[in-house]
Image (cartoon, one colour):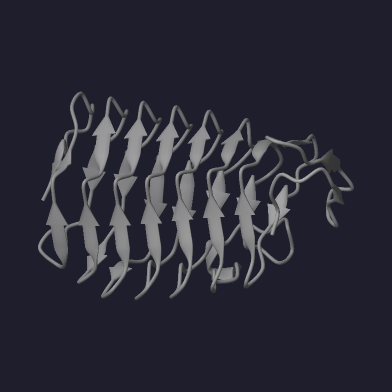
Length: 212
């Protein structure tokens, strides 16, 4: 687990060092991923500044295709802040059973706030905030699948859509999208698949202020 505790960690890819305390900060001035998450890992309570992706599951630390990233298995990414990243703040492929991405903030990044492929059965994305990013606040190139949960997330003032996603019988509820340049909720035409309630927003230039 990576969390506060007064120890020093050195990134394999970047060579950057951080001394972890009550609220550690990792600053990465190189165009590689700052933190790469493996299976059975907990990353929590970190302030991440810079890098290609702030927190990713890309085993190479420098790829561009989310389909080539690793899945998140039995891992937790929670209560982190990611800003000033060249690409996405947080990017993992599939969020699988036992994995949680929660209560993170991804603000002021050049690309997406948070990016995923699928949220699968037993996987949870909840309570995250993505504001003022260059592209979509939340990008989901696959689906919220049966048993997957995507709830209570917030996307404000992003350069693309607040939420760009698809449903496949999963749960997508209680999310908020305000004042995004694109749509608030862009469901790519499959609004009736799955459980969706109380997704609301205002001021999105492309429309889509509610879903469904």
